[in-house]
Length: 349
Figure: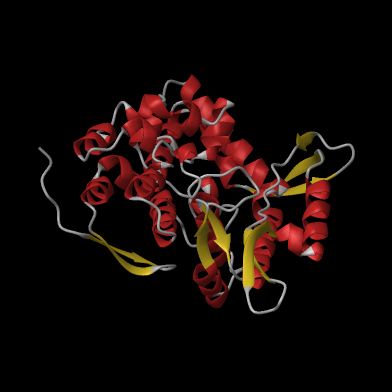
């Protein structure tokens, strides 16, 4: 029998103080499978220390993001089941998240999610509160939480607001407030009632992608970090289960200690911490086909019905009502979606 817990108070920089009283959510928030996400950084290796790619960036962990996604679903009036799904949508992320995907060659937290869930008490917690674990742990059943790009959903929206505002500064506090104030639900999907707020959000998302996630240098650091994980696995230092049992910092410190007697591993780790310059070139030795990240939010459109005494609303994509944004988005996707050849030059070890 699970012990009854007191309500859980969340203090979020985006949403303020929020009291969580629903028993299933409180128990999930206290579970080891959820609390471990505090040690998994949203930026992979990029915020491990000040020498890496994003120096000075506030570390944002996957627990913050998961709670943020839950609060967005809650703000839109989503069910407790949908809120639980949002809280758990990233629960199977390994250390360094998408760096590990690069090492394995597939999306580990998606493909091996069931393997990880079987080692946790999440299914027992959900069942004890009358929820079907198979439903809750399938985020694709909840459109408020997960939709295909470029639509906005809790996962993508929290990521954009939290990273673009707190981490990169591409959104001001007032920009974030405008987006949150305009957030509504229509037909089970997230919609923004303020088209200006939607455009500001979409522009910040593109800026974040271009300057960080879609950059050649960011890709190169991930490749170097993935090489460390591969080598550590070859040396018997890392098992797949250990990728779920340690925090980012614990995992990296263990590899650094082991590298004192393994010159090859030490050199690979030094490559991650080194300062690199990546230059695009038609005869480059390396290549990248970037994943282009854009959003095209659903927006509320009000039109005057004939006679002028009544207004009618409908939902459209931002690109359907803002021609300038449509052109901007299409041009960006065309430019960034091509294969990039580049050379990587070591500046400082």
